[in-house]
Length: 284
Image (cartoon, rainbow, N blue to C red; front, side, top):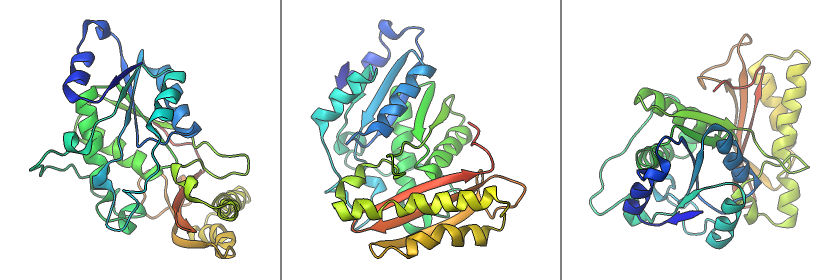
């Protein structure tokens, strides 16, 4: 596996004769990799000849008081895991490389970024779309793979790629869960033993909403109430948001279209997100 920490080295490799005629898939990550990330690498390998994974804790998507400085990192372990999961190239830039002195240009998607994490983390998606746009330009992939645990992010990146006429197919990878249903997340490392058990309320809420939907419930308010019930009963949990929205537009839902139950919940210190689509699988 090639490991690049320099932009020009990455560009030279990308344009090398060795890659002539080969397709490339990109998996952007912030590191501290778990099975969810690695599943995306394996999905990427089914869509392209060569897989590139980036590791970069992007400062522009963190707000004041968030966990930029304490975000978990383990570069050595990450590189071993990438190599073991079919990644051909790892790119590890620094913040100074990605945002040099005097940097003033940002990419912003409107509409889809208004609700959910866009409302509770102002500026977050501007940072996400900017760094992903830069990675797309550097790597020049034909395919990019993003986990559907960050459901809103997936929709936003897909919208950006389409609106800016990027010839990149944005593919969503299914949520990977622990046996008790908790979605895998790097931030799960912050949880105590008790907090880890409490965090399962997110999945229990989603599963309850799914069962209500399967039973014929289509009222968004009722589905939201069902999802909220186990979370509100957990003393260690504090709701940021629980919403039921249209699964494609994140607008007000209707009974005739697929819905997404999306949530962000603080459990002890970390803010955990999760979601479940009701009605149909999300189309690429």
